[in-house]
Length: 185
Ligand code: NI
Image 1 (spheres, rainbow, N blue to C red):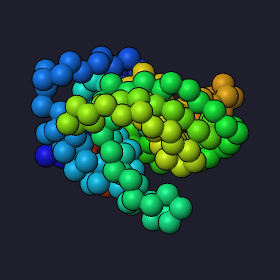
Image 2: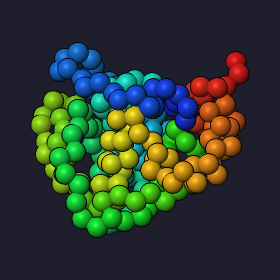
Image 3: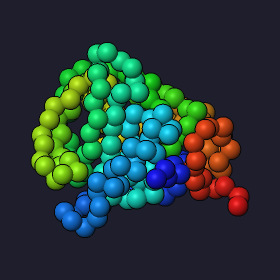
Image 4: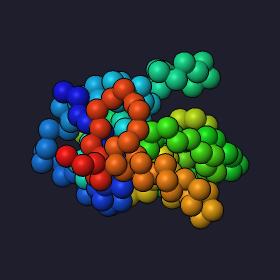
């Protein structure tokens, strides 16, 4: 099942998502639908709030990146908690399926240590760096109600205001289904 992706401006993207109680929902199906939705939009990461579900779950799959250094990494993260962020700060141009057509430089730490459970409810604690860490930090932000645009300077954000408003109105040319909070129906 492919969900429409929630666009910038929807309150669900600004809310801190709630933790998932074991057995309270079908996380396997939810993750499966999210992968389908993400592939249809050519994304490498997707967080549950982006399909309107305010729960602490995100997925990543780097196979579409085509980056030999990163390799293919596919994972479901449930109730994640970043324990520490270390390493050099580095700048990378980020994009987001909820903010299509905008890409901006964001500065983050190179390395992240995170604990989470997977869709089989197995516990993990892992360290990621580089692009993988970057995708995880971006998705982790999503379940805490933070968007990459929140990391930009006030000036930069002001310059993007018109474009962001258009996105909220659904006035954006993309190939995947969306729900825009200010769209006229
Ligand atoms: Ni995003």
